[in-house]
Length: 457
Image (tube, rainbow, N blue to C red; front, side, top):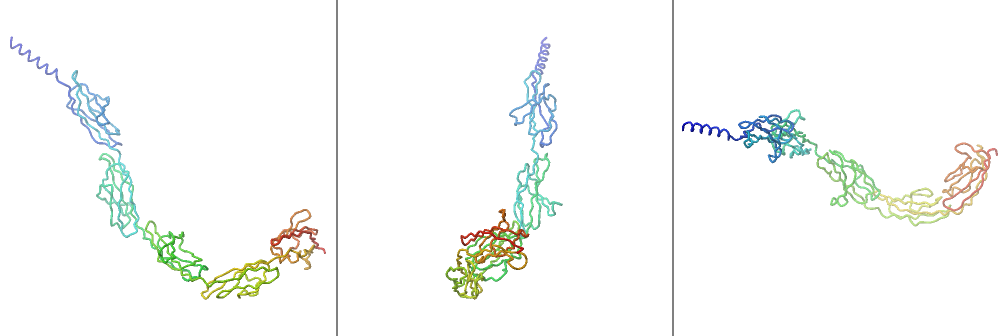
């Protein structure tokens, strides 16, 4: 009897051990790394104990979890755009649930190689500088360079986002190879170039004429030659190069004129982005002003009268204009101008330089008293062929208007000189009476009257 009781107790104990077996979450597997543009697969569960499975996912590092709806041993995933972790809640019957280990799919952003800054143009035989990758997503695997326009490339063992180069003696293209995790595709940056340009050469300046000129009355041409690059400006100095003034001229020639003091000139030349170069100076020497010239005192005469000009100076004189002068090449000519005239006395000194002064001879015009012809006969017989106004040439600033009997203007002229033959627009006007108005700028007189055209007379 005792043995039977022991057997029964042992059996019940064994049954109790089975009944109290707890839930075991087990171990998940399949965690990996993937790129955002790829990534699909499965995670598995093993070593668990329980009949009820519920997969959960978290995208915030396990702070919060969401049921995926999967109750099978395997959990599938695809097209993940961010790192996602998975676990399983395992429950065995009425026992408390247990949680599996966690497996994560680490998602990396797609590789973006970015761009390279630092392209340069070297104006020296060899180039040195630094290139920098910006805007990249991923790490630099290496740099590479090409000296044949990109046909072939040489790898440069450098994983930094910067590349320092030196001693480069020919045009070279550079780019960097970038990858954001081994699961993402490789990308290559934009290209940077190191090229070469001839350095700026200013060249030399030459003068189109003598380097010594007259005070104020001068002009010259400065020519640039032998330059490499374009002219960006000119410089001038009147204090022997202590200070310089900028001349806004980008031509290879410069035309300084009316200089009044000795002046230095230079030209600035730049080739591309290379530093500018400046020519050696060229000088234009300016002679001292010629001796003073005096054209005399302004005077007033009546029309038809004469006045003697009283000029003075040192050198050879000449008067401009020479009309109305008995001799324009002496200091004291007799002037008989038809109207008020500004006479300029120019004197040429031993250096061939001019100085000048002006005198005004005012011609007083009395009131017009000339007789205006009241008829003319433009018939080709050479007698009385044009309309004649007496003394009209003494009033060169005149203006005439002629009208027909209907008030239509048939002729007008400023500075009439007794030359109208009775025509209108090249055609002969009919014989008859016409009305005229005669005005003068220098006097207030206005003359009106009639004139007949009589071709048959």
